[in-house]
Structures are given as C-alpha cells and as structure tokens.
Length: 237
Image (cartoon, rainbow, N blue to C red; front, side, top):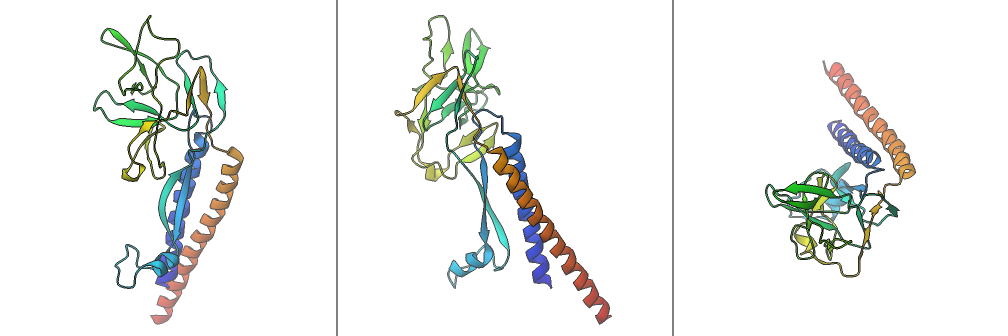
C-alpha cells in the first residue's frame, strides 16, 4: 500500500506543478513578447528501465511520474502596431540584450516595450524594470537629438535555445549548452511594433480542465490508499 500512496502523491504534486505553469501562461496571454512555458514530465518506469543496471539513479522508484522541467516555446507570434515611440519588435529569431545597471547581469527578452530613463546627464533606452537595452556593440543606448530615427538596438541569438532559464520579468539567461550569443543578422528590427504573446488561450484552458481532472483522480487515489491502510491497521489490531 505504501507504493500506491507514494505513486498517487507524486501524481498530485506533478499535476499541481502543471496547473501552476498553465495558470502563469494564462495570466500572460496579453504580455508583450511572452513565450509560453511547457511542462516536461518523465515516466519513472521508463526512467528506471533505460538506466544502467549498476548506476545509482536519482529516482529509485519505477512508478508514477517525475517533474523534469518547464521548457519554453520560442515560436514567434504576430507583430502588432504600437503608438509607443520607443517600442520595438523583432521579426525573426533572436532577443534584445539587457544589462542590469546594479550588478551588470546580462539577460535577454523578446519584449520591446522600451522607454527612456534619465541617468546623470543622458537619457538611456531601458525596459519597464529599468534595465539598459544594449546596442549591436553591447553598449547601453544613449538617446538624444542626434540619435537616428530607428535606434541601433542589437538583436542576438543562440545556436540552441533549448533549456534557456526563465528568470522572471519576461527575461531569460542562457545555460552552457546554449553557447555564446551572436548577431542575428537575418532578423529585422521593427519600430512602433510589439510582438504578441504566443499563448493560445483556448488551448491553455483545455489543458487546465484536463489537468484538474488528473489532479482530482490522483488525489482520490491518495485518499483511497490511506483508507485501505487504516482498515488494514484496524484488522491487525
């Protein structure tokens, strides 16, 4: 009975994790440049069968499911016109490169709803959270009366975008397998346009209903296992 209880409890936790991801996607259906998250699960029986016989796997139980990660769907969405003077969108692959002025940390985003911020005697192009937008030479962009109509905003891409870490505020950081950023020469910068979220609301809602049912069934299995265990303990007594 301990095995069935464990399997059901693992299912409850996994389905709750999936619901959290779907809820976050739904909440960002109108967020510019947002990329939908996709929950990735591993079946523990398959995980155990494909492992080496003498290998100490991180998961020794061969039943139920395991939360592996939440991947990101980087497919491009439609570009919409905007009245913002400093709003930009990327047509094609790639990201805007950002620098945190407090710790110089570099992050990447597809959200081009930028504005100006006065720092010292200069106006800089920044995000809504105050991060500096970098140009093609990876330097902050100063905006003045001599600036061109379309600012020289850099567009950078990676050979492999799989596994990039979502760090909040619609931003990402690369991991080792993503490689180094390079200029996305084939992509184009579009002024007074913004990329829409690639979240399909109808699809997300259908997945929410499906996941809620799976959560309910797993929770019922937990309760049933607990009841049977209590009955067995009563008979033993």
